[in-house]
Image 1 (cartoon, rainbow, N blue to C red):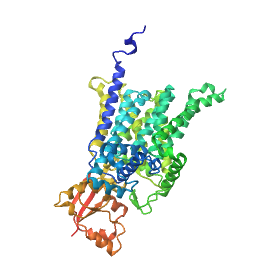
Image 2: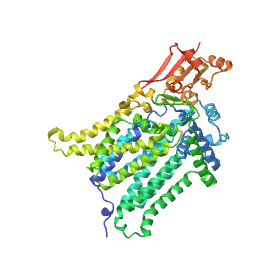
Image 3: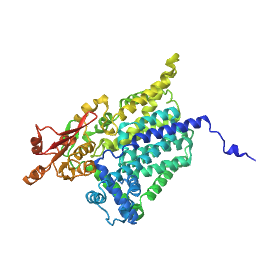
Image 4: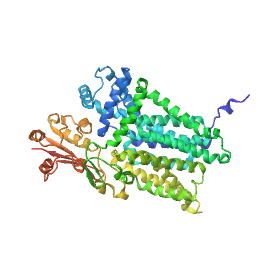
Length: 570
C-alpha cells in the first residue's frame, strides 16, 4: 500500500518554497501601499459609485433585480465591493425604505444618520476593492511564474505593484484598476492554458474575462485577443498539419474559445442579477449606451496638451492622446525596461529565447495594441482609460530588465561585480517604489520626470480629480464655528463635503451671468477654487477679475503642483 507520506509529503521542495515566498512578497507589495490611509481624500466619481453601490445593495435586498443595473459601464464588481462596505458599516440601509436615489438625496439621507457615515462607507468599500484586486494580482503572478519564470515574474509584478498610476487608481472605488487587473489575469491564465492545456486555467481565464466585462465594457477586447491567440497556437504548434489540414484541427483551436465564452457568460449571469430579470435588454443597454457614451464625448470643456477644448470632443484628430498621456503617466523605469525588452526580443536572448516567454510577449503586445486602438476610436478620452495597457507595459518592462541583468551575469564579472545583476534589479524596483511612494497618498499626482514631471504637467495634462480639496476642507474646519461658515467649492459633494462640517455649496461657478447668482456667490464666506477650473475655463471672467490680485488665504500643494486655492470673501 502506498504510504501516507508519499501522498502528503512532509517537506515542500525548495522551489515551491521560493515560489510561495515570492507570492507572499507580491501580495504584501500590492496590498500595503493601497490598504493604508483609505480615508484621506475623495475623488468626485467615487461619490457616484458609492451611490450606485447603495442602490445596488438596496435592490438586492428587496429582490428588485432590475435595478441592479445602475450604469452602462456596468461597474458590477465595484458595486459588489460597495455592497460589502454597506454590510460591514451600515447594513440597516436595506430597511431604510428610500428606494433608488440620485447622489444628492442619497448623501442627504446618509448625513442625516451621521455626518461621518459617507466617508466610513467609502473607505470600507475601498478596502474590499483593494483586497479583491490584491487577490487578482496574486493569481496573475502565479500564472506569470509558469510563463516567464520566477525572477522575471517577481520583477514584473513588483513594477506593477508600485506603478504610481495603477497604485493611485487601485485605491479608489472606481472601475479602471479592477478592469486592468482582471484583464491581465484573464490573458495570463489563457496563455497558461495554451501552454499546458489545463482546463482549470481556461476556467480561470473565462471567469476573469466575465468579471472584466462586468466591470467595464472595454473588457470585451479580450474576445478577439483570445480568438487570435487560439488560431496562432493552431498555426505554430500544429505545423505538421498545414499540408493535410482537417476540420477537426480547426475545432481543436475553436473549442477553447467556445468554452471560454461559456464560462464568462455563466460568471456574468451569476454575479449580475439584472441578467436574471431581462438578460437581453441588460446586455443591449450596456453595448448601445456605452457606444453612445464613448461617441458623445465630454459634456464640458477639457484641457489637453496646452489647449482648452470647449466642446470636450477629443475625436480621431487627437489620435496621439493615449500615446502622449502614457508617456506622462508611466515612469523612466518602465520606459527603459520596454526599450531593453525590444532589444532582447529582437535578439532572442534570455529570457526571450523561451517559447512561453515569446508567446507571452505576443499576447501582451497584441492586447495593448487592440485596446489602445479601440480607445482611440472613441471621442471621450481620459488618461485613466488606458490603465490596462500600463500593466501590460510594466510586465514587458520587467522582462526587459531581466534580459539586461542576465546579460550582465554572463559577462564573467569577478569580485563584487558578480553581484551587479542582482543589484541592478534591486535598484530598478527601488526607483519604481520611489517614484510612487514619495507622493503617498496622492499617487495620481505623479508625472513622468522624463517628460518634465510636475513642473511641466499642468501645461499639458488636465490636473486633479478632487485630491487636495480634503486639505482645504480640513483647513476651514479648524476655523471658529466651522458649522456656520458658508463655503462654495468645486467638487463640493464628496471631495470637499466629506471633510467639512459646515454647509458646502455647489453653485455653478462657471456660468455666473445674472446679478442674482453673483449676489448669491458673494454671500459665501469662502470660495475654494480647483486647478483644472482654470485649465478648462470653468469659472467666469467676472470671478477671475474679482479674485485677481487677491492673495489666497490658503493653498494646497501636492508634489510641486498647486491644486487648490482658498479665498476669503469680504
